[in-house]
Image (tube, rainbow, N blue to C red; front, side):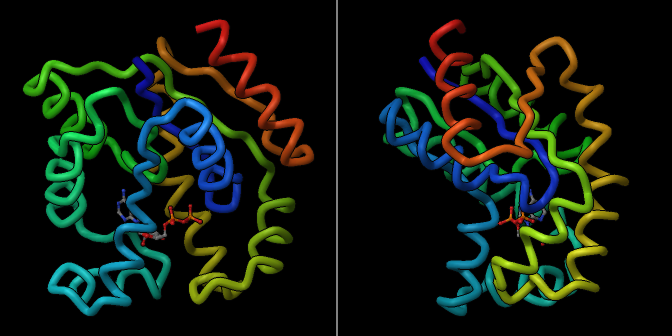
Length: 183
Ligand code: ADP
């Protein structure tokens, strides 16, 4: 069983690393950011409601995100495990995730905290150039991270492992593989 939660600031490389690990472990990579971006592109009800928040670098309201994650975690492909990327992002989401997991009798094994200092993040995100990667919005996303998401590092202390994300992508992947094998 592989159930992992990726934690870390925007641009830490969560998406890239979660994707690589998920395909190596043959479990779905569940990125709330990706699901939301697809919803925006498809102009679904969820996308229409989420778009303005995403463009400002704010969190999408909890009820929307909680609904989507709850639906995703009961689909049949997640039975062998999953890697969560970008969720939970605040304390309420973390508490709700615990509740949902308890309900469906699942548990996560580890929370991986990808650590990258702010100055490196800003350089990376500016280079990435996604629609919400404008410098002011990046700064807002970092603030939101610090205020709302970083407190989860304490919340998840017993299951938390911090990995230095400020290295070449392959080096980070190697550390993660070692960690998984040791789990
Ligand atoms: P990054 O990690 O680079 O910020 P993501 O793809 O994880 O990128 O998220 C992009 C945006 O999607 C966030 O800025 C936020 O607006 C929204 N989002 C993603 N996940 C969540 C979540 N769990 N709760 C609220 N909003 C979310």
